[in-house]
Length: 456
Image 1 (cartoon, rainbow, N blue to C red):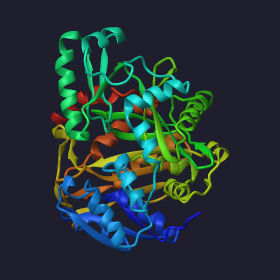
Image 2: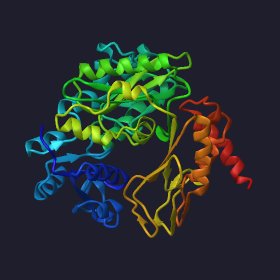
Image 3: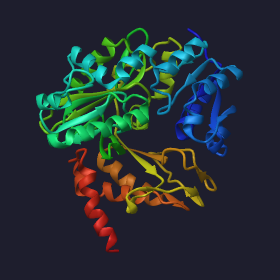
Image 4: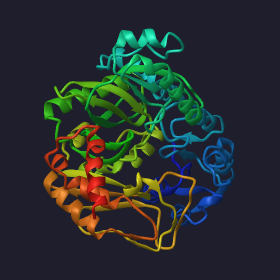
């Protein structure tokens, strides 16, 4: 068992702040890294130390492994926490940390490589007895039309090294396939440095369900209640909630069992999330594994009282989990997360940047705000548009919706456009209130909302 005296957070914004807070509670020093575009970010103020690692664009700073390793070594760090995004699922970065005697707070390079590659993860899931959607056997490099005919249309083209909804195309007819394959490969190559793709049968109007889990080096595992991430736009999640209104206790056990089998077969250590598609008949299909902390992890923390970052650190120190499966099963209440983005949702969600003239977040019982912005902060143009996560907890789903309404009303932001307004409309829609959701819900919902908004 090795103690950490100081940890570098290889990330920015709200997730860097989130990790710093747990480190402080555990008595561990923190080192922030920042680009020249992030000189005024809150995570720099909150860390014990901070090191500039390059110019504002991510490719010149947050994605430069050597600069991050140099910052960790020069400040005497024992370990590196990658957060999410950037290098968090990069096996090469994990390996580089090990070469420099830095503990990577995440799974091993082998696990990242196996499960982070979407096509390989499908094969592992299938061998572990986890249901997978009909699709290609691994990546496809030729005979695209032949493979699609075997699977049947509509077919989904997916980037093997993908994430965040990039490199995905849905094709309904053969005459469009080759063009869409080329588009998907180009997007995947630009985003991930890997243009490999594979095919899956497209499932119409499924729910997006995921299971968060943590597993230690002794094989102890805790799989948490499912998160429902069906409210999404262009494969980007807007609202997540737990538990799902569509999942019964019996189905939850089946999902958790699938996660046990998959994590054990890959000898996975750390926190991870297995994502599934759930069809209208209650059948679920493996989609992918995220070998990192998820953006939406706070809703799981809200209903279970578990600090998932703390569990990650315990596993990285070769210690046993402090949470057991019985703790995960004894969850209480309902939690909803609203991703608040700096976007003009009335104008096709165009990014909105500039100075935040007023920032008044909501408060009161059952409300958590994860954010790195403040009054007077200038939003840089180089990064993701998310400026806050509004996390609601209440004893029941209906109470959580009511509390969401109150919190969204209280949330005041001036100087930039935000998505607060559309969140308010979504949660008051008949479909959301009834829990009758699927991944195309928002696509259907936004058209009449936009038309109605234009009349005002």
